[in-house]
Length: 227
Image (cartoon, rainbow, N blue to C red; front, side):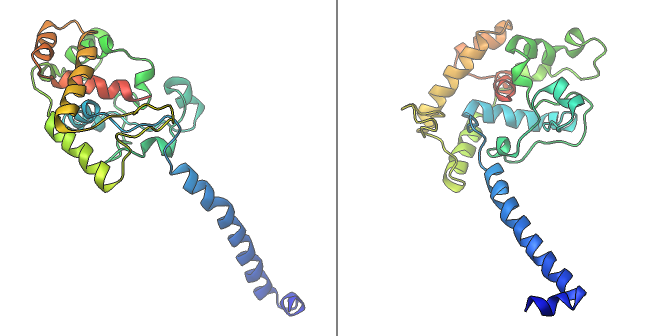
């Protein structure tokens, strides 16, 4: 059989191509499957973080900021480790972005603090001289939509089997609790109080103390989760 192929270069080349392609598929597909799984340490967003992500989208932060660090030294030196596909497993929709009027934010939680974000969102130029970013002072007054964020969490848990109320690390603890609506609101308020404690704006502190969560608190929770 192989002698027949050796006498016919075209068919021999096709046979070689088929064998090489098959070997390539055998090598590549398992790695694709591995890369599509959640990266170790990646967790679903909490309800507060989801609410902040919705603020991020609503105020078009993704129009000027990407969340995709490419594997180039110039990018990793500035932004940190390049982005991995498994880190986006719980992102719906993806916020990779295609424009960088401002810096990439995929690792912003590693080098910016709650206090920094508070000052920056109120008056960007006071933190970054010459910044062309507008003020987002309205986020300090607007109340975050926690109900929609909870509904989103419940939906992705049921539809996409997102691991809420699951012990991901095998340490006997629930990594991202969801529970009932009342339990989620209590957990969200607890998370918001921890963030507000690191803020200076008294109106925000008072709002959270009274059970309301301004958009700025939710947004900061989301930005702090980007690591």
